[in-house]
Image (tube, rainbow, N blue to C red):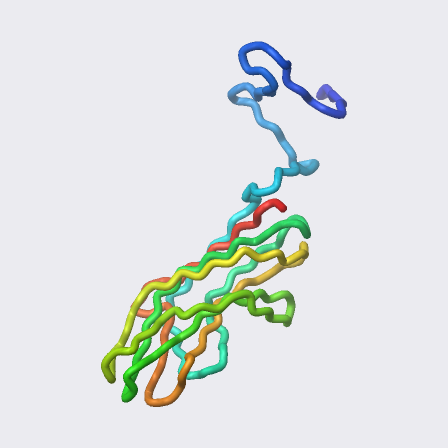
Length: 185
């Protein structure tokens, strides 16, 4: 039968080779599978990543969903979620001489979508008929205050529509990537 040691606190010795330290010898494991381990604020608790590479296009001035979405289930209501997105994007001006497109990070809990942030992800004041390509990065630190599954999605829109303007994301077989990190609160 295994031995059980019950204590309220473990404390390292205040002097010696490694004062105020409790060391786990090489080859030994602490097993928290039957309980929990509480990490101090700021530690990364879990990471989720998803990539998507099929081109999606918009000609709309209203935000529309893309397939770049990832879900995470926070372990505590005090946790923060860091969202990072890298998105290859291109815009086409058609018969106009400018284009400006937006990307936005939305939080989804059930059927409810909440806009967290938006930014210009493609822009050109250039020549008529020009196609502009770039890679954009979006990031946000969210406080979802839930232990239910939370999804984060990229939505896109054009600032000015018409005149053959369009914007594409995840183009030319280049994947977009979303990474979510739960951070202890």
